Amino acid sequence: MTHYSEDDLTLYYYGEGRARAAIERHLDACGECRSLYREIAGTLAMIAAPEAPERGDQYGLEVWQRIRHKLPEQDAPWWTTLFRVDRLTLAAAAAMLVVAAFVAGRVWPRVPAAPGVARTTAGSAGSTAAADVRQRILLTSVADHLDRSERVLTDIMNAPDRGDISTEKQWADDLLTTGRLYRQDAIDAGEQSVAAVLDDLERSLLEIVHSPSEVRAADLEQIRRRIDAAALLFKVRVMSDELRQREAAPGAAQPRSSTRKTG
Amino acid sequence: MDATEAAAVLARARQGDSDAFRALVERHSRSVFRLAFRMTGNEQDAEDVVQESFLRAYRQLGRFESRANFGTWLYRIVANCSVDLMRAKQARHDQARGDSLDEAMELPAADAPGPERMAQSAEIQRRVQAALQALSPLERAAFTLRHYEGRSIDEISSALGLGTSAAKHSVFRAVKKLRAALAPLRSQES
Image 1: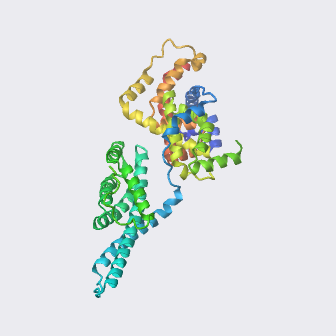
Image 2: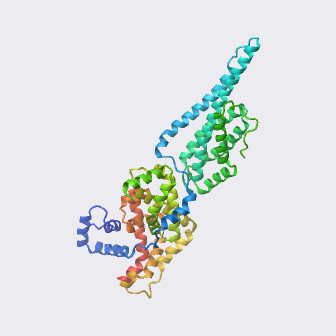
């Protein structure tokens, strides 16, 4: 006679498992299995659900009061991840365009200026306008880059203490590449304060990229401390706002002699 | 709150409306606490799980599929928060855990009342609690969901993000350990 295992009988006790009718017949016929089943059932019957302490009608409100000031930012809906790669590709393409525009502007053969004050003035005006356009492209691209970086940093600041940060790592890695290009462009364009923020940002993104995907609480804490210590989220937000304002203000795209202090 | 109203509140909460989320917190807090208490066996831990579960739920609301049942989704978050909390505690008190297992298995059986009274006694509950505390977080969670909450193995597997086989074996291991820990009581009874 084949006997049933303790596991089979446990499932049977809980009303699960296959061949329940066969087990039932077997238990009628087999004293050994019946005895084992009684022992399992007897033990499990001893384990009554603990009575949870009563919570009053106001309990929900109490819980709300405890958490209302701690609410984190919400994750983006799952479907936005489908577009994430495309957005990053676009960002990289935009960065490449900016670089190409700068390089082309430098190597393109210039038409020698003809004598005459009027023509010189017109050429100078055209050159200033082209520089202004290039500058605006840079401001827009960097502001977008800062916004995306802010979201990665916010994700890291709010991530659970243990867990998978592979998505954030991938995102940071993509941002790192474009960020380096923007930093170089900012230096070339005389945007020293923008370059400084991008430099700070690059260090934190590098740290995220080099963290393990299954990050330990201690590693995460270290990344967060560095982000906090550099006031990086604050700097990124302030710089992004400033660049957006400059984009919108006519004639304000050119580098400022003194940009807002960001820390 | 009827189903249509509940769906509207949930939709607003998903868009970041904190008043709508407050309504969800007020509605579900007591059931979340009850489950958290059963999972952790400790009032303070249960309160921590309640708080962490709602914060986690708020953060992940964007991932919640509106066709799913919010209560079931929240239930999974509570189960996982409980496991996380128990794991964190276990890491801090590994030694104590070993001691409590020994204690649960070695408690003297003398001077105990008769079987009928024992079933109701504080002594038996104390032993049961000690035995439950000695389980691994996953075993305890799986056992709680199966034994107290009446969840099927498939539901446990889904709630804890385990394969069916892993969920089943977590329950089996828990039952084996509990049988060993409570055997002295059974032998008295027989």
